[in-house]
Picture (cartoon, rainbow, N blue to C red):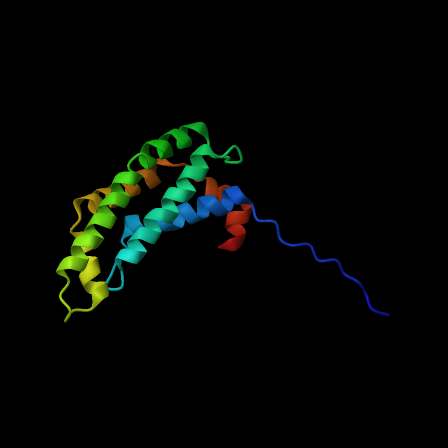
Length: 147
């Protein structure tokens, strides 16, 4: 006789997952781990976009368990995202027009991204934001289970 076992899909905690995504990208940008000779315009856009989407959800979603003080802090930070996105897109367009074909594209991209005042400001603001937010992900069982 075969035993029938019902398997329930693992239910992800949307708050923990979103907060983890935001923090992972933010930490990588703030610490410089996201950077290097393979850091391209595409990756810069991806990091910024992921942070923007996750941050917006954390601030606006009724399912977000972020304390109101953290929502206010994060909302202030999120206000600068359109400026960062625009700077990345403009920088990418200029870099494409001026690219030297003899150099590795990733390295050329990183040098140009690092030279963007907006990217440097974004990196600093991200580090400051992380120091201001509480430790909600470390206290969340779902977050701890995945690390």
